[in-house]
Amino acid sequence: MKVLITGGSGFIGRAIAERLRASGYSATAVSLRTPPGPAVFAGCGAVVHLAGEPVAQRWTAAAKERIRDSRVQGTRTLVAALRQQPPAVLISASAIGYYGSRGNETLTEDSPPGSDFLSQVAVAWEQEARAAEQFGVRVVTPRIGVVLGRGGGALAKMALPFHLGVGGRLGDGRQWTSWIHLDDLIALVEFSIATTAIHGAVNAVAPNPVTNTDFTRALASALHRPAIFPVPAAALRLLLGEMSQVVLASQRVIPQAAARAGFQFRFTEAGEALRQIFAA
Image (cartoon, rainbow, N blue to C red; front, side, top):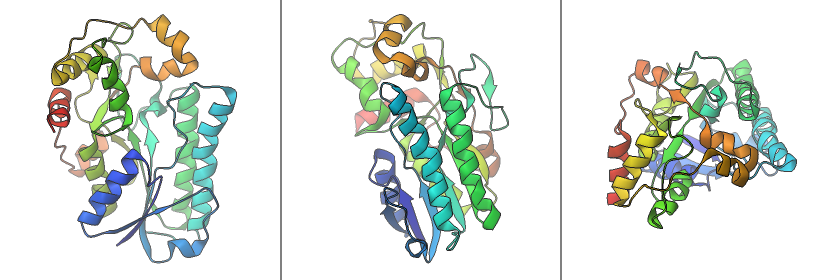
């Protein structure tokens, strides 16, 4: 099957393309910097849409506009191009930011969205992707948590303070972190391409979220480093501005849809996942 990937040059996109090729798919990156013509999608069985402005930056007004437009307008542009050559399935990335910060509440795909900036972006982002259903495309919107993998992504930034010996919990450490090993995210994307019963929102997170305190301990243990320098919430707000909401958000998300469809996670415990990554 021919699979096209937007955002294919990024940390997650490269890994997905490599896995799909190893599984016998023809996986090719496509850019949305200029509107792609319908001919690009001729013979395409699946599109994996990952393109978007990085969230991990200081949120100036211009940055927030780029974050929103790259996802909402970018997805609208993609769906318009697919209309003439519709694939069987569109896997259009979303994020657990959809839910906002919800304390200890257990969140499934049926939980309502939050009301903050990222929640509003995710709602509009998913709505644009679902427009492809109007011309017969099966649409899956994986709401991706913190992706743990070697060689890049969020984990590289998280690990740096620990490598320097100054790692510690963030804020009070009670906020929930919903995470997924990169290998499981890749496998879930491949599973979603092949499993026609899957459609709509799918929480792309491991079954066992952890508090930031427990995640910090697991990361320190995997790196054989101390975790004795907590970062106060006020310091994060001063350093990161509004984007600190992402770091301090509490999101206890469960992969209900994936479990019901029969997907099997390889990594279910954060400590196990982190040990595997850093041992390699």
